[in-house]
Image 1: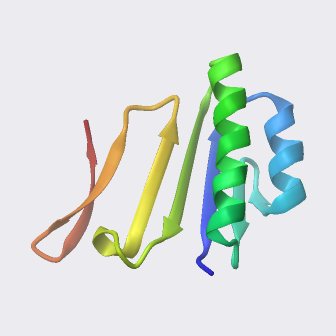
Image 2: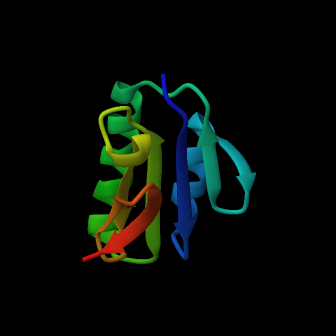
Length: 97
C-alpha cells in the first residue's frame, strides 16, 4: 500500500474534518497516510472532488506512489491547472498543461 499525500489550500473547513478522519494532518492543510489502499484513496478523492465541484473554492493536490507511473509518482489536482510528472534525463519535473 503506497504513501498518499493531500495538500489543501483555501478550502472550507469540511475538508479538514473529513481528511483528518482518514489521514494524519502533519501541518495545516497537509495530510499523509502511509498505507492507504487504492480503494480508500479513490473513495477519499471522490468525496473531495464532489465537494470541490460543488463549492469551487481553493485547491487540492493529491500525490501517491504508483510503480507504473513516471518516477513512481502519480498526481491529481483540483482548482489548479492539470500537472504531470515527467522524466527529463533522469530528473523528475512537474509539467503544467
